[in-house]
Length: 274
Image (cartoon, rainbow, N blue to C red; front, top):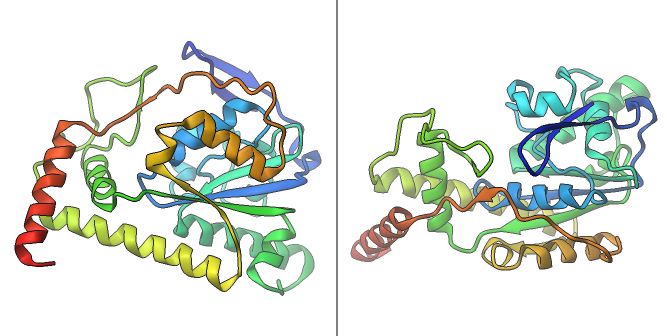
């Protein structure tokens, strides 16, 4: 059972096919790092109704997230977890979608291997072959953000305030975290490095496996979300006719403070000669 929100913010219920019967014929992963707009893209793809339901199912805190647990009908982290995800993330036309950071991707691989070991003996083959046993015709979408400093500032502020998204249907003035933080060069710089490491992992993986993912850029996506969704659908071989996306509920979180902090950060970098 999927518990969703309609355009008015009310809960609606969608009942997918029973888990044991759901089979995907086309799969994709949105590969990204923190604060690259993956939720915006994932929600837009979900809204098409024909491009899977890409959410962060393999985040280590997914088992404690009320929203993900509503979608997965209170699934536990056991041998049946991947089956629940496939059922929830696959639209009736057989398309499966999920969002993964590098750490989440490792979790997905582990869950596939755990299922293979339980059902067929020790898993063999390359990473792609192993994933293909559960996620057929698997394709990769790489979502990047060119402005690494802006991404780091967004990550720092979200981490401190615990406000990861601004949704016009439910956002309030209460952050739920430590409150709006002060500028901290060292912490922002650390988040810049975290993003660089994650992107390096993805780049090395695609090169090692000789993959050509669909490359999307955050700065271009926020200027033309509908065009970006059409690019994804075309990459997946799904017709883009009659696609009419609703206005996104997510609001942009960058503001004058973000811009001021970016200028301060870049000035310090310049003064240090980096």
